[in-house]
Length: 257
Image (cartoon, rainbow, N blue to C red; front, side, top):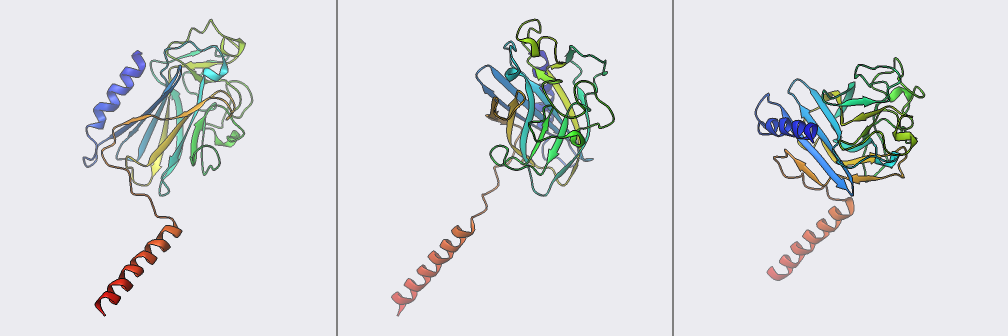
């Protein structure tokens, strides 16, 4: 658990600075489902840089593609947009079975896309190494080359295997056929818009190579300092509220007559 503890420790430290003018801010989304466990760690600085670390923090062995973390979906606030810059493995991570040395730069194998709909629970943006019939060649962080497989997000290659993975065990796709990153990947963005602790929300972790494979919603978040914004009333609710107020006024007038 060395990587997860280090990343979380730094993020929580930055989180104490939340709300200070010009300071950094951090959020940590995490969740578990059976033996699967993942985190999405967000660090933002006042110059507009936003960093996302996606980590597979499970201690369980990876035995099949459905155990490999390949993406994360989330809801990006309407007034915000992200400009994808780079994707690199974190300093304590290892790339196994890599056919061509990448030096840790995996931007040609990971993609970012927003404006999504119909994926899961209202999410509208995502980061992924698999295509899921959602991400294409032009969505990659780096479109200038390719490390393995087709020049588009596809298949299991460069997905994130667990902290506890024994890379010698499991079926063929996870024991040599595909390059796999053990631990975490850091993605860098430029944020257009103000950052709050609800700029990114509704986080879902995705495993395997298809949307029908395991996924789960975050079950905890650290670093938030404000309550959730109030829900926007539906048009029908507004009409009913107006009718209720009108009814009260009518009754008051009748009683006063």
